[in-house]
Image (tube, rainbow, N blue to C red; front, side, top):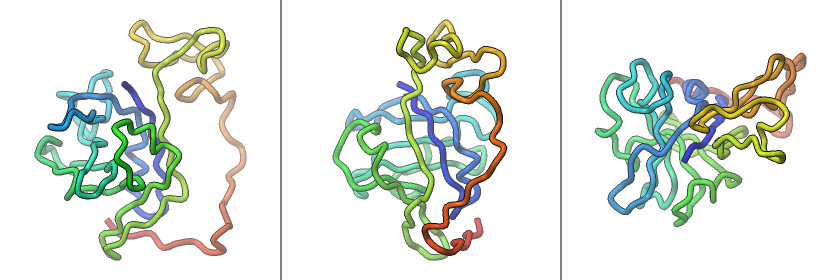
Length: 184
């Protein structure tokens, strides 16, 4: 019911701010789940700020999962996931967003009017599991409702997978150049 999303910000800087946890909040007319950004209080509805103003939904005309957000206080219910998307998955007819977790995802360039592949993008299931072989085991404990791993001291990350902050930054030089950022 919950996914963790990490956006790269190489094309649209604003997308990096939407790296967060999303949870099923409602279903579309065909019965596919709609994942809404979880708010500060743990829920997705009725929050202030940008929380609850971003979502993943399936778009039939794009034959893909899309990511949309409202950059104002308007409701996400007013947004069409087929017209107002900022990122989308590879083409798929799958009902489960996790089926495209390891596929290519694309950012829409408003200036170029093209979908450009992300260099860094990930989607993962983040339902907490502190069973002996679970991701939270030995590094934290699951909250009472199972929505997060509460890290032991000295650990951090969605599943408390990190021991200390990174001391080095790596740069992907596979493209032999830096790609230009698009203005918002």
